[in-house]
Image (cartoon, rainbow, N blue to C red; front, side, top):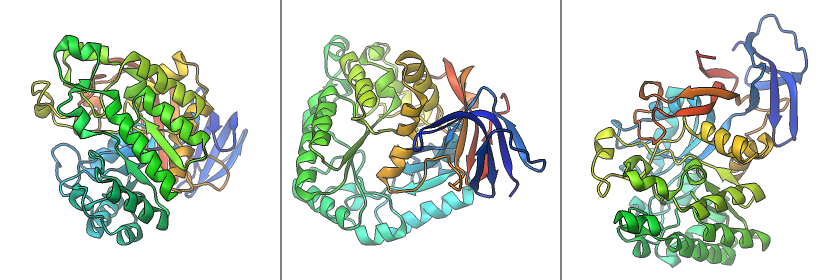
Length: 428
C-alpha cells in the first residue's frame, strides 16, 4: 500500500478541535503525521490547497435495498455513491426483502461489502422477526455476527411490551435501538406533512404529533429500562423539544436528522414532485427552523442521509402511489455547505462533529477522527466548488432526488478508506 501525502489542506478534526493548515501523511492504513511541510518523495501527492481535510463521514442510516431490489440499488452501487459523497462508513437498515433478521444475512452484507471493497458497511438488524413487531430476533447471535444496532426501520414497534424487552436485550448486549418514530394510526394514509399546504393541495397529511407521540413513549420506556435509544430522522419541533428535555434529565438518548429536513419545507410539495415525498414527511418552515436550532444547540447529535433509492418508474407514479424516499449520499455535503455553513454560519468543527465522531460513538466505533495513529479514513472537500448534479454523475443506481440538474455548492474531492484512495473527483 503506497503512502499518500495530502499537501496544504485545512485539517479539521472535531475530536481534538484541530483546525489548521497542515500536511497529512497516510502510511499503510493509519495517519502517520500531521505536520507542516512533510517530505516524502515516494508518496502519492494530493494537493489540498484551499480544501478541507476531515475525517471520513459516518452515515448511521441508509438503505441499500440488498437483498431484494438489485434493480434499485446494490451494496456495490450504494458504496460507490457513498464514497463519492465522502462517506467511509455506512449503516444499512434492515427493511429489505427478506428483512435482515438472521445471522446469515448479516454475514452476507459483510461478505459483499468486503468483495466490493469501497467503504465500511455495518448492518443494523431487525428488532423483530420479519419486522412484524411481534417476536424479537436473536439479539445475541446477530450482535455476535456484527449487527451494530437493531431497528424495525420503516415501522415502529407498536407493542410497548415488545419494545421494552427489545431495549432490555439491547442493554445486555450494549447496542442501541434505532427507532423510526411514527404512529400509523395517527398518520393513516398521510402523503405529506399535515398543515396548511396539505389542505390547499388536497393531499392527506401526516401530523407532527404522529412522530412526537412515539418519541414521547420511547423516551419513557428507555428511561425505565436504562437502555440506549437512538431516534431516527427527527423532523418536528415537538420531537426536538422532547429530546432536549430528556437530555437535560441525563437520559441515554441520541438522535439524528437528515439534510432534507433542514433544507426543504412543505411548500415545495406544491409542484407534486414525488422526489419530495419522504417518510417522515418534509415539514413546515417552523419545523425546519427548529431542526436547525436543534443542530446548533446539540440536541440533534448526528446528520444521517436516510439514502432511499427508488427506480424512476416507481417515482413517476401519481403522488398517492409513489414510494417514500430520496437518495442522499451524493447530495448531503452540498446541502450542508449551502444551508448550515454558508447560510446559518455553523462552524466546520460543529458540522463535522455530527458527520463523524458523534455517529461513530452511537455504535461505539473508534472512528471519525484525523489524528496520528488513527485509522486513515479521510475526506477532502472543496467547500467553494460550484457544480450541477446530473443523472450521469450520480453513482447510485437510482436518481430520485429533487436536486437533479440543480446547481450546488460544495463537493468531495477525494475519499480515503483505511489508507486507500477509493474516490477521486477527476474534475478537481
